[in-house]
Image (tube, rainbow, N blue to C red; front, side, top):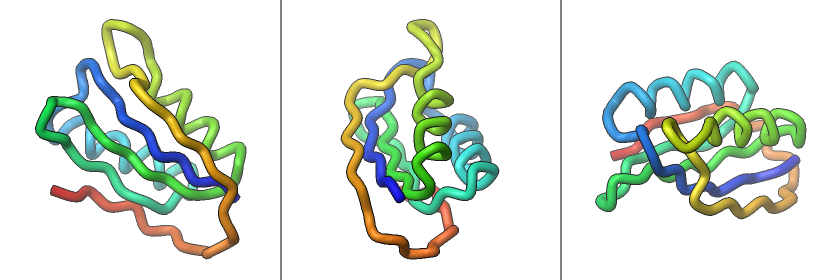
Length: 89
């Protein structure tokens, strides 16, 4: 299992990006959360199978005119079997 903590910049503000990120994470079977930050970026924490975490990172980093990763920290985690992915304020 892996956990990723990422900050995403670019065209990410607003409800649409957060809901899309949550939907993608749920499709991949990830647990975690997504929230807007005061500086206009979005913070994401997701946990799950290694391949699913890597696919989520690829989805989050879609190029200079869309969302792009500003920072990423990936750690190995014990299995928790959690599957909830939430949008936080």
